[in-house]
Length: 115
Image (tube, rainbow, N blue to C red; front, side):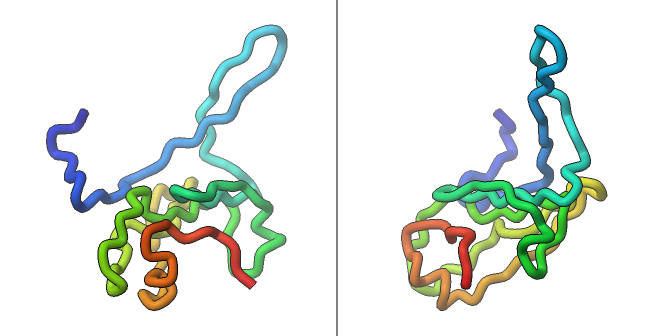
């Protein structure tokens, strides 16, 4: 455990993605930095992978993440650990959602479905 980890204010620094290699009789996990057109959505109550080209505004080879810790204590809660991680560059871009929308979820992280 990292003794400097702040459980009250978690902050994502990076992601590592592995895929299962099933070549031959042996299976192994291999790190990848290229998901191509695939985008991952990670959240406490919903995680999925989809083709970025099927979703307007989504960028492939990225991970969209929401806060892992639910605990929205007030309707004015603003997520501090929400963003888009670019797997190739290793950079995180802020991903803001209107606090009024977050308040509707109150005790749950956002589900990655919109109209």
